[in-house]
Image (tube, rainbow, N blue to C red):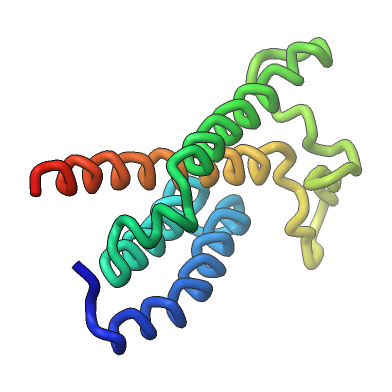
Length: 154
């Protein structure tokens, strides 16, 4: 069942802002409370809002179940591959191999007082992004399966 035009319009306007906020929570999870799980849940909530406003069939034409399954798979693979790279580099599984390297997210931490650098987390932001993608896919797939069962029950 579709909602009124006002509800659909507000949902369409709100959806991009919910996505941006969810991605913000994912990307800044190593600096602030939040992270991959919380941000992924916020993004999945945006999809729930669209389904509530437009109906399952209309949203399923735009955001397919296969797309969400692929997102979940990609998130899991990114998480596991990031953890396994440490073994290839001769370190332990899940070692923060990117910290203090000077590469992406790996700026060395300066000693003594100073303004600090927020880019020192190593692989933690990558893990947050991977978890965010996986949670987005997993929660959305759960929603899709629940709604497809509700459609069959009618």
